[in-house]
Amino acid sequence: MANRDIELIGHLMRRAGFGATREQLDSYAARGYEATVEMLLDQREERRMGDDLIRRFHPELSGMMGTLGSGENWLYRMASTTTPLREKVALFWHGIFATGYPKVIHGKALSDQVRMFRYRGMRSFRDLLAELSQDPAMIIWLDNQDNHKDAINENFGRELLELFSMGVGNYTEQDVQECARAFTGWTLGNREYMELRSMRDSDWPYGRISWHFEFHDHDHDFGEKEFLGQRGPFNGDDIVDIICQQEATARFISRHMYSFFVADEPPVPEWPYVEPQDPDAIDLLVQAYFDSGYDITAMLRALFNSDHFKDEAVWYRKVKSPVELVAGVLRLTGEFDRPRKEILDRYQQSIFMGQFLNNPPSVEGWHQGTDWIDTGSLVERINFASQQLGDTAKPGVRTMVERIAHAPSVSPEMLVDACLDQVGAIQVSEDTRRELVDFASVAGSPNDANHGRIAEVLQMVASTHEFQRA
Image (cartoon, rainbow, N blue to C red; front, side, top):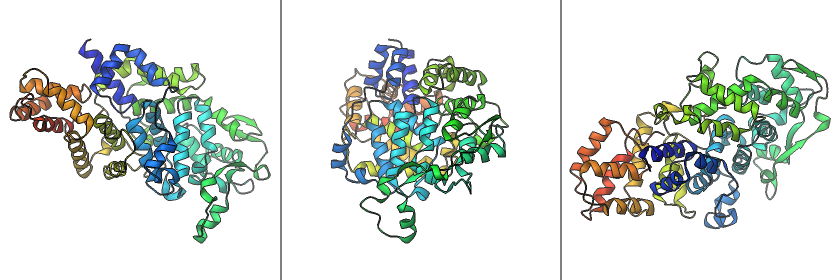
């Protein structure tokens, strides 16, 4: 099969997942590109170890009450899942509906929210927003437990419009207030914890772990409201319906999708003043949004099969987030065939690079692109990737090295090409390739039974500009 086919599917797997081994790319290419897209979109056939067994290996993944358990459990799933797009979409929504531990102080509630993103995130956007409005972590994060019919709290209503669905400039202050009124009485069950937290008292055995949504009709404003030009005795579900009907919502979600899966857009606060870099791609996604009845899978299908996504001009344009980089490397090394305590070390390394899952820097989430890179984080990224891919004790690295070593006698140029091929069929610039060849020229022949020297070339590949991008 043509190298172009393998490289295109490699691009798809880096964007719609966390990369793929060369063996996996061959399998996907045999299916064909469009069939591989359908495989990624099909969420029914996940093969994974059950949570009951995972918890035996790592008890903290059961309680997840602290700051790290939820995130390390999620990283393990990213590194081992057979449905990578499901985890990638959950990460996409986590960056938009950013919710964090410092205020929620409840790792399991945050993990439950991620699970909701995992299983709802590729379905109807309308249903996703409705679920989000009832999510305990979100209720606490944006204070909707303090939103009462006689004393509204606008936090959730404002962020629902500004950061979750429409964006600045598409609603008024009155819309924010009417939205808040509609969500009065949408609160948290098992609220005893809120008082216990302030007293530093014990809340076991039920307490926080039993958080759930409750609707308090005695605290709900049933009066008539005017929202986005429509009038009625709206409740939260009605507000979500009206939001999803707006073209501004379709464009806002489409631009987020383009920025996450295709090419970095400016930070969200700049969107009212800066046009999308590819308006035609946004129009394509908007059309898919309305034609499908707000279906996220339909939008992703249109995106991944589009020329906008396949265009080589957008390849390697996106800087991998720390979690994407770490998960992708772990999938190559094959280190986690089962849960191991070392996943905590890998998770902490992603934190050192600047991304702490379930602890975003603000309600805006993380800024993407080159904002991930500074002098400190770049050193962490390169050291991590090169150290992992240079460790021949890891099964995935050992497999790559043996395949290269068993090839016929090759030149340094062919050695470099073989290493680039083994880590996911990546392309590099001529300048990068020249530096790699110069290094390989002193690394010895790959079939000299010197596996350590081959691993050194893999380490150099892991440090390249292109490997750090998707």
